[in-house]
Image (tube, rainbow, N blue to C red):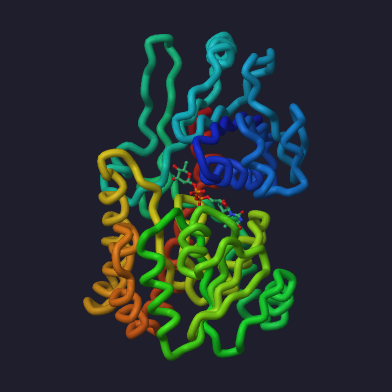
Length: 377
Ligand code: TRH
């Protein structure tokens, strides 16, 4: 059944809002043959993820998705069958009026942020009735039954496994980015917000007895990295060595290539929401820099995820993993946490793959949304 979808994305900051909505829009088109319009209020955030895009046009087709500039003056457009308001961005008043005037009201979904907290399954799928008669349904991504699941393309894990089994594909991808790591080096990607704990982590890697090659796409962590290196700038591609640590700056790569970068690495430092999920599909141990919220609400979110993630680890590995995540998110000393984690590397590596497999057993978010719509009509 081909339905029309309007997905609204307001770019608050960073790339998470557009990252999630762009991924969802693409998947609805490619795997569910839906007609999708993606309304974005700041297309400049879209271009780094999809470099063919033009931030200056009112509407464009990208990978089967009609990407539209969300204009200040709302035009008269037909209301879609399904309206997705991502992360509680406010729909245009004129569009709300049109929704009300539509003979068959659309399914209005408020797509929420991802959280592993317990209350999520109790709120997922609940309606909220508004005084104007419109009804909005809350849709929560999540990690278990009773949630909307996680974004995952149908062939993602098969593609990743095929990639894992092809050293040539890995080499070609890395060489395309100008990365020539020593064969025995531990490859790590680093995507994070500013973090005062970075210097101690870099110190620990530089002092380690195993070579480490750290890949850093352009972004907010660069300032801390440059301070530690004692440099003014590090151009994409440039390499610096300190002790056992090689640091290499990378360009910000297109969204599909970022997945491949995660697959190439033995360990991934990620942030926000979308890269956090992609690191899990990479099936490697990872480190999450959570997006900071008011009144430290993000700590509950962080600990809820940690509790789920480490529950099948041995107590020592769970402790090592949790300590490192806590240190990173507190911006505190990373050295002991990192060295402790290295002691549990084989267990954490096997666990990451198991976790990925376990999570892939639940319906993915796009599939869950399509089903939700089917059940609703
Ligand atoms: O950019 P983020 O910090 O986004 C955040 C979070 O979503 C947060 O929850 C939200 O409240 C805030 O924005 C407003 O991190 P996130 O979610 O990982 O999004 C980054 C996107 O960028 C993701 O889709 C992966 C993509 N990416 C690339 O395409 N290429 C790259 O080189 C890198 C490093 C990332």
